[in-house]
Each structure stands twice: as structure tokens, then as C-alpha cells.
Image 1 (cartoon, helix red, strand yellow):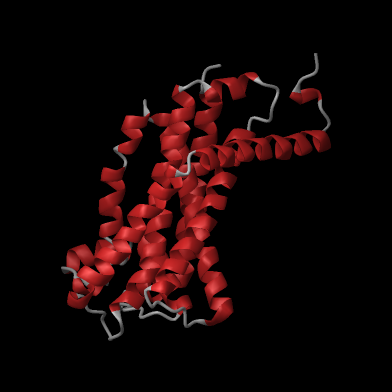
Image 2 (cartoon, helix red, strand yellow):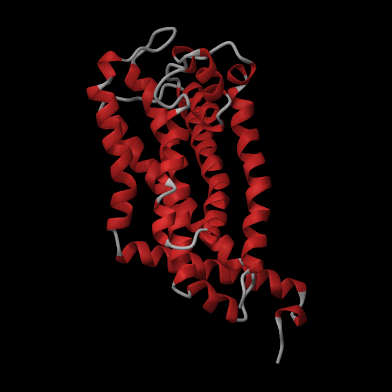
Length: 272
């Protein structure tokens, strides 16, 4: 019986792509048959937009001036991408505990297909989430003022952050014992997003807390997308805030370099 090792390299590459696409189709079909999952993923950020934009917005200020809702919207896009790793971890641990991953591993399919397919599926869903959120933001009055090119680069940076956090989610999904434990990751994600520049500029925080928020990778993407969308930036005087665009590229690259190998190694170490 032939094995993957005996297949020519060109054929192995073809089947790796084909197997990954099959995993993507499975994931998208799962969401199609259970649309409540997408509604839940979008519900929290939309409610947060209404809560912070309308309930707290009148009491918030932006350093240097500007409308708070315009300041808030790019941060909400970043928060949606940041929270996405919880959904990734939940789906992965659900597949692991229900034997789906074991069935995949018993099949003559590329070992990278499960991890790669999960990543592609999440990026497709992230694109849909961003489009819906941006349309919602425009309904309540937000307008991107940075031009088409700036908007496209900002969109790419948001997906770049989501791409990096996918591998954190896959790794955590393979580490935690059950879906309930994966749901508990929200307790970790929430303070990480709150101690950032998503809702408030770091300059308005106590100095020690503002320094932590400024060096939060999420803050760099928030500041960079605000600049690209033409929204109020509220930038500070620290090095990381002055080079937000650079760090919005560097931070996700660092996260990917750490967690992608960890996710692949963890998957390969699972017992058959």
C-alpha cells in the first residue's frame, strides 16, 4: 500500500492543498448549518459598539481632539479579530474531544491539512465579520477618511493580526481538555483587550498601566488602523506608539513565529 512518503513531491503538494480545501469546506458547511455561531461571534462586538459608542461615548475624550466614535470604530474591528482566537480554540477542542481529529489523522491525508484548513476557514470568516462590522459602523455614522488604499492596508493589517492569533487558538485548542475550558479563555482575552488602546488612549491611563497598554500588540494594530482609516489617533510619545504601523506588522509576525510551530508540533504529537 502506498503512503504519503512514496508520493512524488508535486503530488504531495497537490494533495496537501486538496486536503486543506476539504477541511475548509467542512468548516464552512458547519457554520452554514449552524448560523447561530456566526450570530454569536458578531453579536458581542456589535453590542459593544452600541454600548461604548452611545452610552459611554459622550463621556469619553480623545487626546488631541476628535470624535470618540471615529476613534472607537477601528478599535472595535481589532477587538473582533483579537477575540477570534477563542472561537478557533473552541472549534479545535470540540473536534479533538469528539474524535474528529483522530479520524483525520487515521486517513491518508496531508498532516498539515487540518491546521492549514482551520486557518483558512477562520480567515474567510474574519473577512465576513469585518465587512459586516464596517457596514454596521457606517450605518451609525463612521466614515473611513484615509482613502481606498489606506482602507485596504488597514483591512490587511486586521487580517494579519487575526492570522497570527489563529495559531494561538489552534495551540490552545489542542492543549485544553474540553470545550468548557476553552470558553474560559474569555477571562484571559477580556483584560488583554481592555488594557490596550481599543477603547481609551494609553495617555489617559495611569502611567504604569499606560505603558503596558502601549506595548500591547493589539494597541499597535489599533493605532495603525486608525491612522490608515483617517480616524483620530490619540498617539502618545513613546517609541512603540510613534511606530505603530511598523509594530502592527512586527507583532503578528512574532506571534506567528512562536505559535505556528507550537501548534504544528502539538498536532503531530497527538497519539493516533
